[in-house]
Image (cartoon, rainbow, N blue to C red; front, side):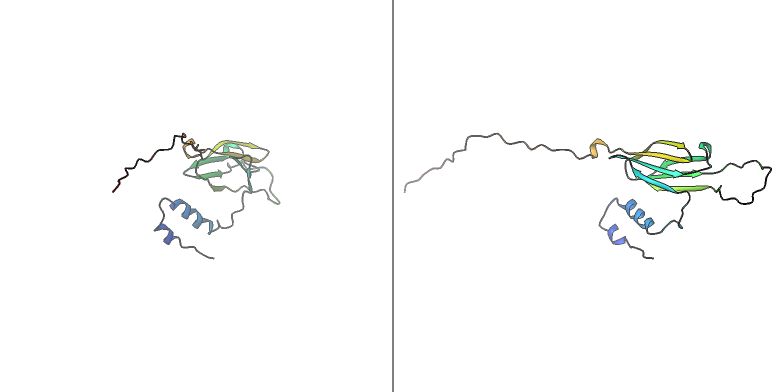
Length: 156
């Protein structure tokens, strides 16, 4: 696997430490974590939705936390009382999980809901007015009468 050395860029940039850390972490996969499966979709110009398949979990067994540009979703099954029957085959996962998502600047969680075994997390990119591009109008200078150049002619 290749490793990219960002140290030359540290000498000529200021404030991009988080970006370089993110790029470095992308090069190292998370031990091929595949549980639980999820989708990320863009639902509007500035809105997104993460949908995770969390069948078998209820609201009390899931927690969502957004902190410092990282969204963490955790699931821990509560211990079920011993059932009278014995399993011949157990294919439904009961394992705990934690899935992390890197969030861009100004992305915030607006809502979360659990329906039919799918956890929906709605996100909004809310760019502050000061950071949005703004139109600068160009004012035309008022037309003035041409200025006369005064010169003194010396006859000699």
